[in-house]
Image (cartoon, rainbow, N blue to C red):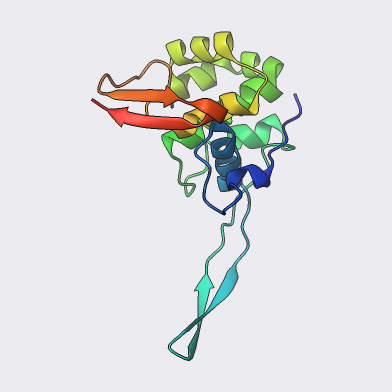
Length: 164
């Protein structure tokens, strides 16, 4: 499958962040990309300050990378991984590389568990929205749901999280 993440879906017309599964998929994909060092200039009270922003030495484009690059994401020691990013990368592997995903079943099951592997296999959809679901609370894993959290999907693919 060809993935294409559109950065325009991150914000709405007035510049606010969208709370949709598609916007979350784009945000998670951007989190995996390489970021070079940069500097920003701030002006406050007539004074100019230049601030150095450290980049990221690792990174990849999940739309075009190889299966081995996706698997190497789990072996790096200095890479900060959240549960959402782990689930996102595994779902990308399941969509883009179904054959390799099945061949590496044992390695992937060690990361997420056998039940989760089976659930991803059975419910995978050829949609960006399915990838973005993992960015929301109580939707990261199929098998580890919290009973006190409700996920409400509204119109236009918006998501609202409520607690009991």
